[in-house]
Image 1: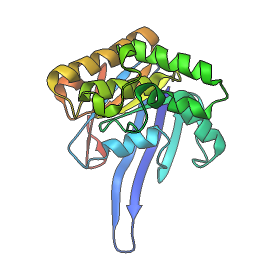
Image 2: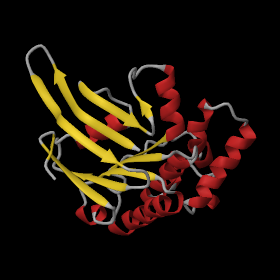
Image 3: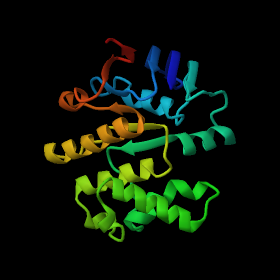
Length: 221
């Protein structure tokens, strides 16, 4: 499902060169729930962004769900990202002026489907995360756990093969964090959705199939 070969990422300025990722080799099979851990600044989010085609590596090859990425700014890559990948962020990234169901619909605006179908898919996604009764609410009217469940609904509304989650429980207390992990675990089990999750929480990482660790941009375990 995801294959990275000799991935490096180097940030350069006129005076300094910083290696964010150093020779990463990773294979994530279909249906795996993988967690990535490491100290702040070790390259976890950079790696997730590269897997998600949001950032371009300085070197190496990437294969995601059979798609070999060559041009990151191409229309084909943008279409692939919209249809095959779902993203969940620590800070939710909900639009405050849109209600819940409109937030969930957003990824579908880039697809050639009717407004009625978009609405139905968004309602289905909200039902799956237990928020069908909140579709007319605005983000400011929701708890942190509810906001993250809306973010999960937005990530899965297009039925992606892969979900990439960057600290999805980082802003939540332990009870809400467990609820979010239960939803992700169910998605992985019932739909065989491949999930790659960055986390600082060892307890959450231990709920996944496999854990890898980064340190100073290198994979150490």
